[in-house]
Amino acid sequence: MVNIKRIAILGTGSMGGAILAGLLKSGFDPNQISVTTKSAESADRLTDELGVLSFAMENGEDANQMAVAGANVVLVGVKPAQVVEVLADVADTLNDNALVISVAAGVTTASMEAVLPEDVGVVRAMPNTPALIGRGMTGIAAGERATEWAIDTTKELFETVGKVLVVEESRIDALTTISGSGPAYVFYLIEKLTEAAKHQGFSDSEAALLVNETFLGAAELVASSPKSPAELRKQVTSPNGTTERAIARIEQTDLTQMFVEATDAALARARDLAAGK
Ligand SMILES: NC(=O)c1ccc[n+]([C@@H]2O[C@H](COP(=O)([O-])OP(=O)(O)OC[C@H]3O[C@@H](n4cnc5c(N)ncnc54)[C@H](OP(=O)(O)O)[C@@H]3O)[C@@H](O)[C@H]2O)c1
Image (cartoon, rainbow, N blue to C red; front, side):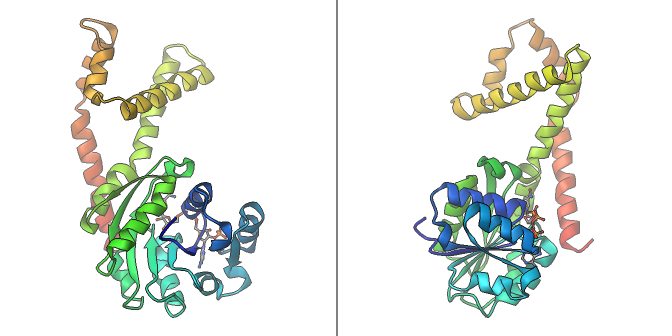
C-alpha cells in the first residue's frame, strides 16, 4: 500500500471486516490499523484474532476519535443512519488532508463533506458481498473535494477485495442495482435451478453440487475466455439438441425485460430511501 500510511476503520462488521481481511491478506501491517466497534466483545475479538488496535464505543464514547488519530485514511463501515453522526464526532480529530471513504448505501458525499473540515476529501464506495471472499465488485465515486490521489487510494484499498470501477456519483445508485444487489439475483437463479434439479430426481445434496458447480464453472469460463457469454452459450447449444429446447422455453419469458424492470424498481427504491421514505 503506497498511499495508505495508517488506516482507521470505524465500524468493523461484515463489510468493514471484509475490507480489513483484504488489507491484512495483501500484507498491510496490522500495527498501522485501528478499528472500532460498538461492543467490547467485537473489539476484543478483532484484536485477539487479527492483532489490530481496537476501540469499542461501549468502553468509551471517544472510541472513534481515538482510532482516527494519526490515520491518513478513514474507512466508515457503520450503518447508513449513523454515518453523519460518526463523522461529525471525529471531524476535529482527523489528520489534515485525511481521506474519508464510506461504504454506506445512500449517504451522499455532500452530506458527509458538510460535517467535515474543508481539507478532508470524501469518496463513496459500493462493494458487494463476494468481497467477503476477495471476489468483490466495488463501484467508487469521488466527492467534490476528492483528489486524484483520493481515488487512486480508494481503488488500491478495494482492489484488496476484488475489482473496482470508478463512476460519477450520479451513477452509484444505478451501479448498486447491478453489482450491489446482483449477488442476490444470482443466488435466486441458483435456488430456482436447484429446485428444478430436485424435480428431475436429484437429492438435495446432489442438486446443490450440480447447480453450484455449474454456476461456478460457467462464471469462471466467462471470466477467463475471450468469447462473449452469447458465444459460450452457442458452444453448448447444438442445433436441434437438448439445450436448444431448454433455451427456447426460457426465451418465452423475456428475461432482459424482467431484469430491466427489476433494476428500475431497485433504482426507484434507492431514490425513495435517499428522500427519507
Ligand atoms: N453487507 C453488505 O453487503 C454491504 C454492501 C455494501 C455496503 N454496505 C454498507 O456497509 C455498512 C455496514 O454494513 P454491515 O452489513 O457491515 O453492518 P454490520 O455488520 O452491522 O457492521 C456495523 C459495524 O459498526 C459497528 N458500530 C455500530 N455503531 C458504531 C459506532 N457508533 N461507532 C463505531 N462502530 C459502530 C458495529 O459494532 P458491533 O460489531 O459491536 O455490533 C459493527 O462492527 C452499511 O453502511 C452498509 O450500507 C454493506
